[in-house]
Length: 120
Image 1 (cartoon, one colour):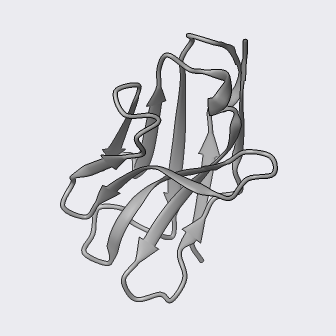
Image 2 (cartoon, helix red, strand yellow):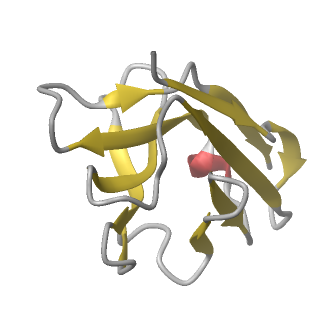
């Protein structure tokens, strides 16, 4: 059974930093069986949107609103996906979800979510 377990959320003032981490259990992120991993977020009353994605080849893509502030990385030894969030803004407040897309499974895998709150 695949599990994605996030950690690192919390409350921070605007301009501060947080680092999120997602560990995979029952899944190995750096394999050809996983086409993409990354982070999404969902603010109250809004849809879940992509924040950053790493493809199986290692290339990263970011939402325009976080480009230059957030950095996504994959630690193959620890089997984690990390999101370094800098220069945080109140509009970054949301529940952040870890995401993995397996090539042989019809639906993506999601973590349980971790709350990030940025105060002004």
